[in-house]
Image (cartoon, rainbow, N blue to C red; front, side, top):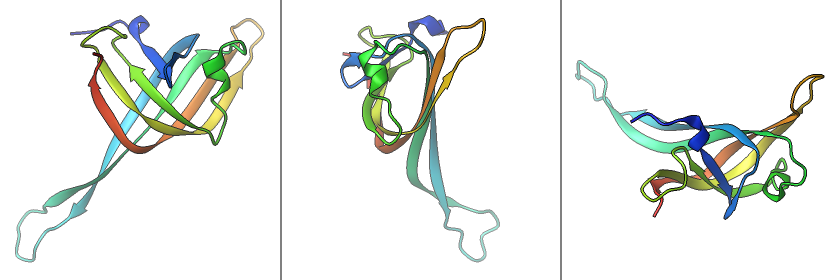
Length: 128
């Protein structure tokens, strides 16, 4: 089932991040080759996983969760791509803020983009 982007929510701790305009999360997994001599095809074992992402928002210095997104800070977050209703998917974990950019243009809304590197496991579940 398709979902409209306007349903997305991000929580920093338990507080909802205000003025959010979008987010991404990327997950990756390492593999280790375990092919034996004489095998005609390569084989692999699953290794460690990792995740990273970014948060896009309108700049709002009055939004307390936005003000916690400083480079070097570790945040507990929950990304909710379908919204925050019971049964909606949730992706939760901790991330270290690796960059923060503020964009200003003559005829546009001032923006803030924050990138993070996940630390530890990403928990994929549903809103209860």
